[in-house]
Figure 1: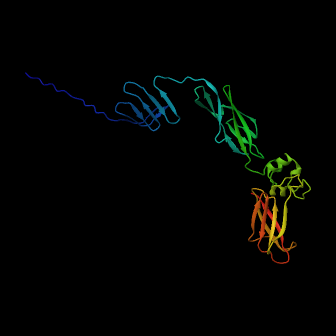
Figure 2: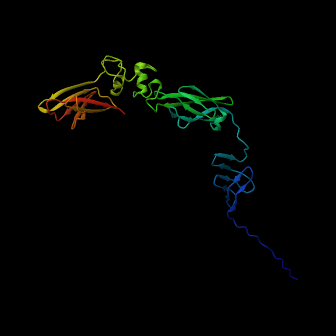
Figure 3: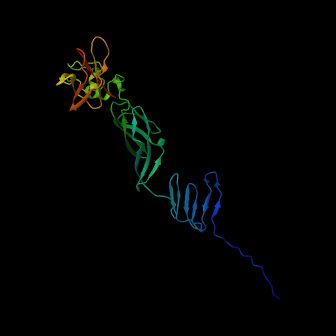
Length: 302
């Protein structure tokens, strides 16, 4: 008698396997995809290279960046120092900048340290304070000035050099809001000197500090003054030549005139041409009419 036994065949087809998101109290794994051999698993934030029957290769996560190598249960290291940073390392006077810290390891990698865990202090320079959370606050300065802050964590200390910018040129101490640059006043008079006042005449030139500042002259030097000479242009009876000095970079010079010193307004001379030789400027007024004409050079700076 012939007996027939039915045999069921199970056909496995290699295909990508899809798993849904998984989560627990402590973690959440977004939907990932395994290839046919189980070699690579991927998701939005990580990849894992492995194989069926065991975990091998490398696993990595994007944010924060982490890499795990099969066969290693942890990383052994020694802390070699504390590294401080700020981005950027400049801040405006009166402004703030957040400082950060990281442990520097002996393999040249770093471990971030919460700013609030660091003991912060000011070493030198125009910093009013560094808060417990690492927020540095700049003082008022009369020029760009360097400052040093310090941080300590678990026996290691680091420093960072910041640059406090003179972002407001007329706000320093007793020199504030007087129309004269703070750096200029400190350069020539030191700090808190009443002789640096804008209306003070510091020499025999008859020019105030404000005038000398705008014109780019040196206070305290009577020979540092403005000169404007007038001369006819040979063969051109309707023209007049004016020689002015000194001219200084960063200033704007405007020649004005009027026919009566006791009345009228100063107006810009039209059609003036000029040429410069060193610190001297020669201007030509192309239209000299009437019995007299008075000239004045107006100087301005940003």
